[in-house]
Length: 350
Image (cartoon, rainbow, N blue to C red; front, side, top):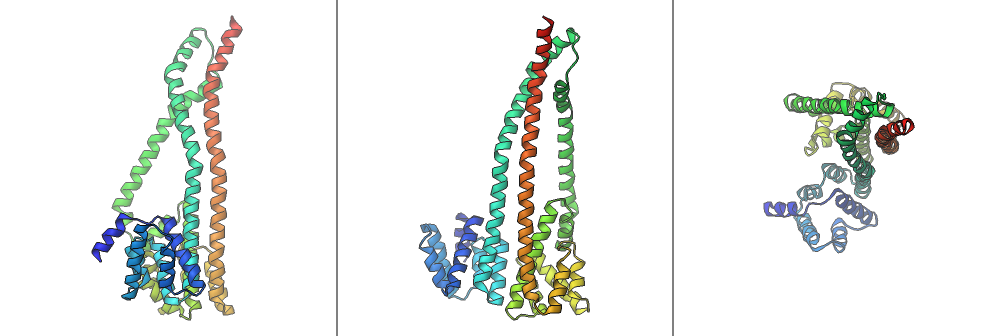
């Protein structure tokens, strides 16, 4: 097994490969394929190195090794392994695999979209920075000296360039100081906190905290929905969360919620006490318990979280790009006019 794990590390699966693999398995399972036949069928479309790994998967399945442990040895993402782990408990294997892979593909698509969005502005910023250094170090001092001898007052755009030169290093130093402070805080305090307290602090961050809240709410609600749909009680579901040690956050969360339920607290009150869930989550739980359709309410809520998250990311991306272009454009125009306008003054004086 150790030799196999070493082989896996040489051929690491990308998140896209992982998600696509599980999605295709889920599709074949939905058509009635046994999981071994689904893997064997998918392996035909993979290169030789992947075929060898998938052959090892089939041998491990024959030995009775759970599928989620096989994926763990393949180096799959913990969230995807979590979907498989819970699917093995509630039996909705095909649906869970497709749901988990769709979420992973969505997250990967958003990351690629963000990288693509920033590539061109970053290139422009580098070119602008080069031009700025050239103008500020070479052209502008000469023109400034000439203008001062002729008693010409610096125009607005010249002041902008000099202000940027003056304040940008200060802003950069402040950012570096904040990063250093954050690193010190993480090393000496944050990493020593319990995983639940860590998540509670992270979700307080602007923008990223809201996105993480939606992700945490989605994952917990959809897994609980699948488990309840499979005939497993809330208490048993929480025990399964607790036993999933590969996801420490959800493991500790399941244990803590179960302990509070035993002490007589209601599920909606417990969830309302956690800052890393959406505020309407307890209301969804209460409504589902009252109408006897908790698993359906949770499934609908989980899909709602993903929709809201996707819309939020789309809005952020649409806002970021114009702001970057406006900043770059204003700086370039300022450099251009800082040189050009005084030249017009000189021409007028001739």
